[in-house]
Image 1 (spheres, helix red, strand yellow):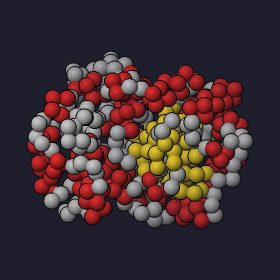
Image 2: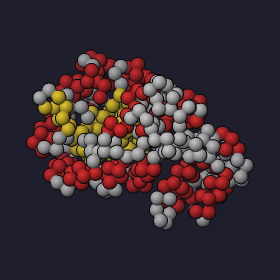
Image 3: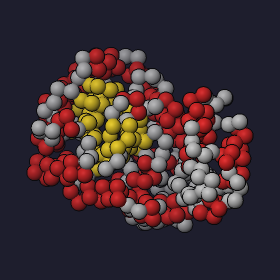
Image 4: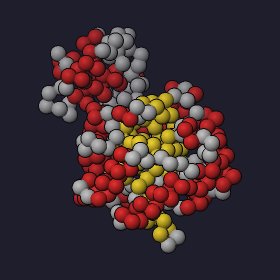
Amino acid sequence: MRYRQLGKTGLMVSEIGLGGEWLEQQNASDVKKVVDRCKEYGINILDCWMSEPNVRTNIGAAIAGQRKEWIIQGHIGSTWQNGQYVRTREMDKVKEAFEDLLSRMQTDYIDLGMIHFVDQESEFNQIMNGEFIEYVRELKQKGIIRHIGLSTHNPHVGKLAALSGEIEVILFSLNPAFDMLPGSEDINDLFKDHYNDELRGIAPERNELYMICERENVAITVMKGYAGGRLFNADHSPFGVALTPVQCLHYALTRPAVASVMVGCRTPQEVDAAAAYEDATDEQKDYATVLANAPYHSYYGKCTYCGHCAPCPSYIDIAAVMKLYDLAMLQETIPATIKAHYSSLPANASDCIGCAACEERCPFGVSIADQMQIIAKAFE
């Protein structure tokens, strides 16, 4: 298992994480089997947004005696009322639900206290200027949560969170299909049947979010990396082709600022399918060729940092150079930190000899040699 730094938190997390959602359907024994299989692979981060009491109890029992080995991403504002899940900002219910989470998970602290499910900008502003954030700050001050995070499906809210100076981790819905959609305050838009044919590649606001998080050192943990399994079926995929779990994971893990993908697993076998990413070949990870040859896609001419362009005879890490340039272009002038990172690369755009061998391997027809000239000039 490979590990990545979780933004500015200082924590190191497995790039494959456990999303607990589907464990609601399992009994205590089956939950423990899934958790134990995760431990065998070295998975060390889990997300528990669910308020249903039994699943919290079952996860807590499964990690009993191993608490310090797990980084728990627990949600604040997810409550259980009258036998069903309710997202709320009513503070008495919020506090009761969070205390229940601590109790059932058999712990006195949560590593990542996530402000739960904020998709409206007005709601974000209300939270950040009201009693909800005061409660979260109090939890952090007391050490009951170690870091403050937020979950959202809306890149506009994600941007506000990343720029807040207080949110350290964003749980965000991310996969190649969702990335083609503009920001929305309605989560149902992510599962629309018809995508905007005019969109070219990743929606600008989503790409901007990833770049801002990278710049601000705010980590992204990924939810819905498989789009609820729709991407595994050509008939349900908006691309008209099926992707594998490994390809979906590779797409998410090649986005800027992404630290870990929270994979929802019902069984140990589904953990196996996700953990297979760690030993997968480049060919098995290759989402780019699949999407480039799909009946429907809008990625042509856009770099997705997939790495197909390698190897370069000048030893340029083309994907890294492209990513730094895109990050730099968010600013009126290139920040010194980005210039330093660019300069520290063993080779950069100025080392391009214009052979264009990389372009023959690029699935999306990016004019890489021309782009290297533009980037070299920008960083002069």
